[in-house]
Length: 298
Image (cartoon, rainbow, N blue to C red; front, side):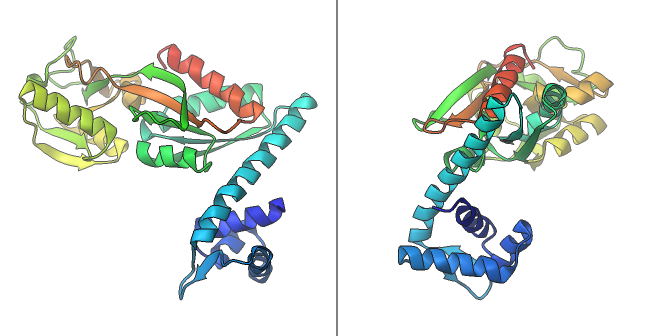
């Protein structure tokens, strides 16, 4: 298969629009349409259903997309190996990560890594754990960084680091100076929680149920920034990874307080790759870089 044709096809599938894909690829819409028609003629099947607004993959298109993504990934891997043979560290590392790690840890690591390898670029997307797992499966990303995911046979856990949920409060909060607190201590204050269905919320709800504690959150959101922002400006307590509030703790506006709960202390950050996929040399090197940092406690 022609790698350019695969890239064009994958772009149309991503945007569900030939026009939007053409804009993203900086090619003529007519040229992109011809390429899709040529693919359909070659295989004798319709790859897209044409809709009044955009396109959507057919069943045959779903099959071809898997092969196209594999081909694109292999081409990128081959290019990276060519650079490695010439003693050059170039290429791009694609990462999908939970928001907690995109606030401080990943920017710090990427900056340090690029000091050693200035020819390396990064594509980082922020998402929830379930979507990150799907991105790893579909080769939409090289490395997925999740929180407390369910085991899966098609995914390899390359790094696992214990990362408990802690109480995040304003630096002047009544709980801020405690060495540790219980869930009943938290129940005396307003709380802000992650949305139901998230990995962290599942742990929080289970821990509260086991402790016989009921929390009535004044805010539920999937935004870590909003949770830490409210905590810094009020007496609200939220539960997040310590890394989520790292900058605020260093600046003296937030405090991270350990919680006496076996369940809240069982969470892990896990770095995932697809079992059947070989990463490029530069992605493997960054993976080792990331693993070392997480093993040291971030």
